[in-house]
Every structure is written in C-alpha cells, then in structure tokens.
Image (cartoon, rainbow, N blue to C red; front, side):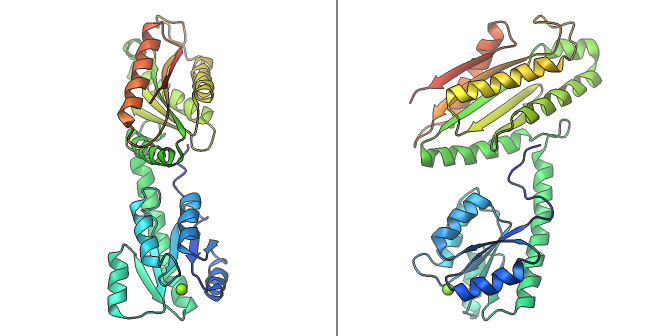
Length: 310
Ligand SMILES: [Mg+2]
C-alpha cells in the first residue's frame, strides 16, 4: 500500500524553526532523543523543508528576520500539502494578545521563551499523540474497504495536490483510467464472492507494480481503477501502464466467459499533459476516459494513450 502522506508509527518528525542558533541547539538536543528533528533558521527555509519532508509537527519562532512566524504559519495553512501539520508557536513574547493571535493564525499551541525543556517536551508529546490518531483516522477514511488500496476520495485529493505542484513547475502529469474487462460476465458466472476476490487480487497487483515514489493507484469505483503518475511524460507513462496491464494478465485469473481471452484482463486509457496555469483538470479526466473507451472498442486488454496539447 502506498500512502506517502502518512508517517510511519514510531518515526515522527519535528521541524524546529528559529533564527537564533542557540535556540535551535537547545530544542534540537532535547527533541532528538525521541524524534527525528529537522532544523530551519528562517521562514523560507521552514516552508521548503515542510513541503519536502512533511514533518508531523512544527515548532515555529514568531520573531524572525524577513518572514516572521505569523507569515510562515499563514503560508503553511494555505498549502494543501502542509495545512494539516500542527504548529506550536514559540516566542519570547508572553502577552495574552500574542497568544490569541497565534492561535487565530492556526497554531495549535504556544510556548514562551526562555524554554522550560520539560514543558516543551510535554507539549510536543501531546501534539504528536494527537497527530498519530488523526493520521490513523485519515488513513481509514482514505482506504477502499474491500481492496485496502486508496479510495476515490484520497485519489482526488492527491490529484489536486499534484496538479498544483505540476502547475508551479510546469511539469507533465499522467492520469490513467483502467477497467477490468468483462467483469459483469465474471460476476454473473463465478458469483460475487469470486468477483470480490478478483478485485482484491487485481488491486494488490496494480499497487505493487506502480512502484515509483509518488505513483498512486486507487479503486475509483466498481471494477474501475485510477492511476496517477506525477512528473511523468507520455512515453514513461505508457511504459508504466503497459506494465500494469501485463501484470494483470500475468495473474492468470481464469475467466472462461471473457470475449477477450481465457483470463482476467485490463483495458487502460492514459492521458498526459504539461500542466500550466489556467488549465482545467477536467480535460485530463475526459481524455483518459475517452482513451479507455477507445481501448475497449478496439478489442480490450490494451492501452490507449493521448498527449494533450495546450
Ligand atoms: Mg527569533
């Protein structure tokens, strides 16, 4: 299973942001006994590290040169990739107004300097325990109950994120729709129990054959699967989905009632686009669907692809 947004149990990461090296040192040492620690000395560096490493918690200094903690917090909260990372503000200021403002900006807690290390550790521990529970719930609502691979909800969320990322870098993005051939005949003849087992096998097979980090296979509905390949051009995308198609055929699940061949097969429609501003995601969906329809019409058990021009 491939849900990269979720941290593994026992390896929680804390990003400490402070423009004073001595504060980074104190907090870094205190936290590194129990957690992976990342250190950033400016708001800009913090935003970069947060996006790249997706820490489980951010300790954020308020008063910093260039970008202050409030600004950094606002940016983290407006980015879908980082908006769910809890933030604890740390600052020398201890007025009630500052604390209120910090919480209104979206911070979950507040610590004041000079640090009481035991208090910092206790607050960090509380937030990380909450984060673990939130992640677990998030994981449960993101999985398809039958096949235990990501569901449509999670897929659409990830597509949104990857689309924005691709927009910034004007990168290529591939989207594929895949459909088990003659699945109705499979269900009608072998029964729904066998149908469910078939879906589970195909799902597991697709998941384990989309191996590059960032690649995502989800159950989109019924016998339909969606595949997202970020930072991938048409040629590379075609290779990946052709391997997926072949891997399902190689499972050799008997299907005597298929008009294609005597095993379960997959038809795939792939669309690739170089994403830039003002482009509509819906075009990519429509094209992938159109290609899937074409693959079905042409005899099934095949991949049809299209490059979308701007
Ligand atoms: Mg400071």
